[in-house]
Image 1: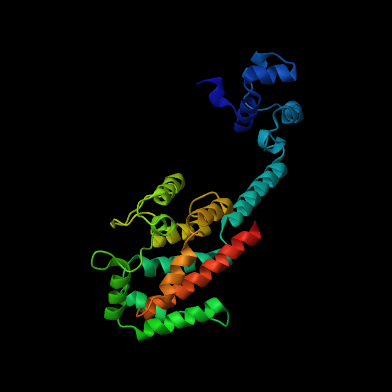
Image 2: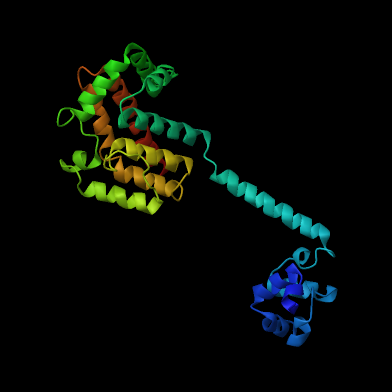
Length: 278
């Protein structure tokens, strides 16, 4: 069995911190064999090694400084808890993520009976967005499943092409599969996003972009607020509000007109919030 395998953990940590046994011996002004033969830090050397290595005395000799070891452990746990709390999304971000998720669900495919029932129970308040939620809930209650599916088909599928094309490339260039799609795909790769759905929809579909924004708001991926703001301002701000305005004003599609109103108001709120936050 080697001398290294017999060393106390605190001593090994100090040796590693200073760059080896020889470095620690030179810093202490003693011979290297002396340090090599230690199984734990000698009591008279604890303070000096603490100063040299930066390893706390409670780690070097917890048997001699148990209270300091306990304090250090408590401090580390507190730091971990603080970091975890900082990483947790707040209530506002959870609400934002839910709004993105709801709109993504309604725009990616025709609603099921369960989705219509969920939307019909939406709550609201006296704010413009709250009133839009109430109008959407009423529209969901007044719309049959068959009618909702027909509206979705006419708007986004159609015989050859739907009435609206919910893609960044189309709204920004007039064509599909253009540079905005390539830029979205680059961010998908950067965030490590792998699509699991079986659809052939391009990644710049507004529902997929909203799914990403929901994940960014919850901190599921990305590097915090900076990535969230950049993604929004690059991939949604230039066109999403215009898409929702078109959806809101299209005739004969009452359910999706109310979805358009919710989306337009939400995009206005998000744009103002990101601008205000700088």
